Length: 250
Image 1 (cartoon, rainbow, N blue to C red):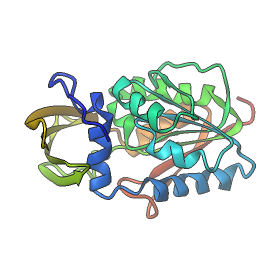
Image 2 (image 1 turned 180 degrees about the vertical axis):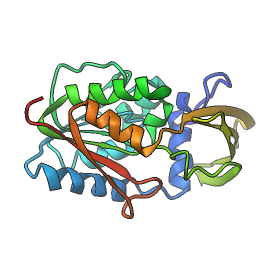
Image 3 (image 1 turned 45 degrees about the horizontal axis):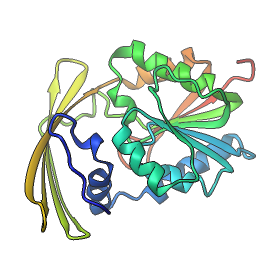
Image 4 (image 1 turned 45 degrees about the vertical axis):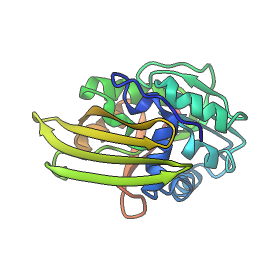
């Protein structure tokens, strides 16, 4: 992968190559995760042929979905992530878009939002808006799958995370510390150190404020969007999955 310059003010989402290096080094199994999600889609819609990934990032899940569904597309707000996605997956259309209010002009058998991207939504109003946008892009009876961030009752304040990744002559160290911020959010401070033979060592930081929506708030947002919903745990890493089905009358 080519080296990427990261302006400190832009953070990790401006550098999709570094983002991928970090999570590949941490052993994130995008293939297995995509398989679980596809299985839940097929459980409700066996003949599904189309999928939209909302918050697709660099396309690591999306490229596996493209082997399962004939038509796959993605949206994301971060151009630095989409740049990598387009380079690595030139056959998959992806667009810059805000999951709270986007329009592709098409409907899909499934809309998914993974890697806790919905945690970036502030308040129940934004969560409702995102689910409404997802539902507006579903065929009747279509499936929406959302990977939530942590709930208030299972969030671990003071959590420290660390990883070290080495690939293509580059070493990336990541250390994070996450605390509670108020009643409904977490704040993660992340430090990155990147070392490369020709460029030396550089350091930048990120702050990620993520909403701690309750399980009930997620389920209410699905219901308001016209979807039935179930919460599935035990087969997907992290905080499980919400799997919804759009009512036939919507």
